[in-house]
Image (cartoon, rainbow, N blue to C red; front, side, top):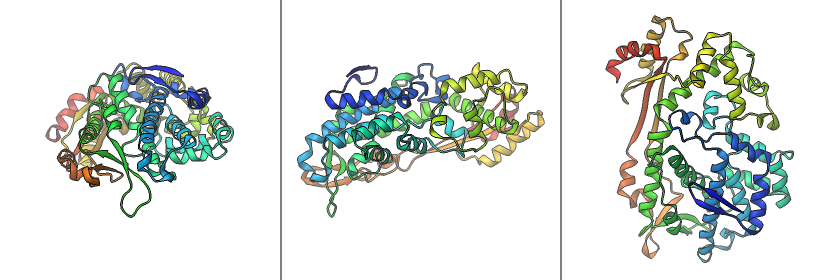
Length: 422
């Protein structure tokens, strides 16, 4: 099996691995990921950012395959129970490929607009463990225990600790692919990773008093690549994931969904979405009918709604007439800013009040994770914080994205009311 990929070049799977990957890719639950945009509404800020969860899933499986190839060369450094045989290699590849099955329309954006609904990780587990899904049947043919093993591995749990961390951890195959893919597709050159060097410098070691191997990097050659990984993640959050236009669009769709909850049944709303809005139980097969196409059709219908608020929000999202934003100081009290913004909205007769919002997101530049260590000559082991002055400095930093978000007509009034908070 040979695939062309803009990020990794040629991706190939062979033998029994190719047969498994091909069968999983053909499953309806995996093909649905073609209809889920990985970056959600960020494409409104970055025209190239239209790539799908499907492409990311294939990329994550490719990085996992490369990780497995590297670990095989380190087998003699591992206790027998931490070595990866063909069975566990297939389980790991399936976990990497299927880890995002539960995403709803527009990926993480959907979770933000339905805060009380199950998260995508929960839906992923339900899809994998449902005996009526195609992915479950394919995995069960591999091994009746495989669906449960894959499901646990996706949540970072399993008998082989380093493998579980490679699927779901601070430094995992998921992040290694999406940072590079999001960077490439948006044209932002901050998410570039030296994956070749990262893998070449990867080591495994067994801590004193333990019987399980943990991830490490060769401190003589791998530390710079690891530093680059964490810098890339920070830069992508600041430049892409928290871009002001993308966040404004997300505030608009949150407001739109809130309005839908207030209005009751609205023409054009998919029945499964209506149930989710009302907090009703939804089974796996109905949930899987939701994708970006279904949401796009609903938004098109809402542009013809009799409700002026819903119609204006849908028009703005469909036609990219987004709310404006005003940067606020990181030290500004969000509650005080909300009060002032509400006063402006009320003074202009804007209702409902949630058409204006204060958006505050705080990012720790680096949080120490002892699951990844630095291996020095002579077998000495260091924490990343102790080995890297750069990461030690980042660990003391917290970056704050803090903005007021409001309808375009209020720009002058909001700027004046919040002038001392910018």
